[in-house]
Amino acid sequence: MRTKDMALVALFAALVAVLAQVAIPLPFSPVPITGQVLGVFLAGAILGKNRGTLAIIVYLLLGAIGLPVFARGGAGLAAFARPAGGYLWGFALGVYVMGLVLERGKGEPGYGRLAAGMLTCLVVIYILGTIQLMYLLHLNLVKGLLLGVLPYIPLDLAKLALAVAVSLQARRALQQAGYLPARTTNPESTN
Image 1 (cartoon, one colour):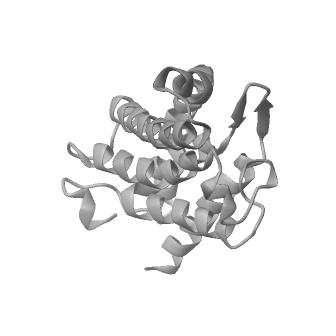
Image 2: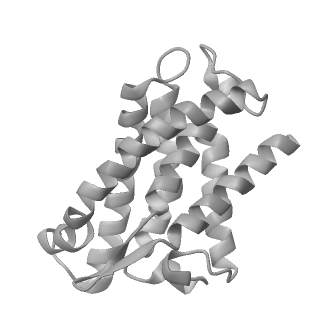
Image 3: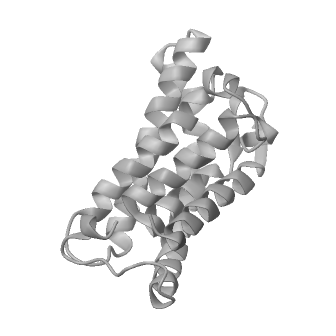
C-alpha cells in the first residue's frame, strides 16, 4: 500500500471518529443519532471498496483497543456486544457492499450510482444493527424497527444527500491532486 493510501485511510478513520462524537441520545432507544454514517458514506464513496473498508476497519480497531472513538466517547470490545454494536459491524460490511455497487458500470459513478451505493450501505447497517438490537433486547421485528431504524431514516437520508454532493467534489479534487486514480472500465485494478 502506498503512503498516500495509508494517509487517506487514516484520515477517513479519523473523520468517522470525529463525526461519531456528534451524538444525540434518544430517550426511547439505546441507539443515538450520530454523524458516523456520514463518515462511513464518505469513506466508501471517496476511497472505494478496498481503501474505504480498510478505513472503517481501522476505525473499529481503534475503538476496540480502547480509544474513545465511538459515539459519546465509547470504546473497548464491549461496545461491539452492546445493543447498538451491530451498527458498528454494519459499517465495514456496508462500505464494502457500497463499493461493489459503485464499481458497477464504467468510469466515475454519478449522483445516481453514488446514491444507490450509499442506500445499499445504509440498508446493510440497519439490518446488522437491528438484528443485534432485537437479539440483545429480546424485541420482535416491529419493535426492533421502531427503535433501531424508523427514527433515523430522515436524518440518514439527509446525510446521504450531503455525502453524494461532497464525495463527487472531494473525489475529483483528490484525483487532480494525484491522491486518487481516476476510475477506469475496470475500477478494481485501481482500488
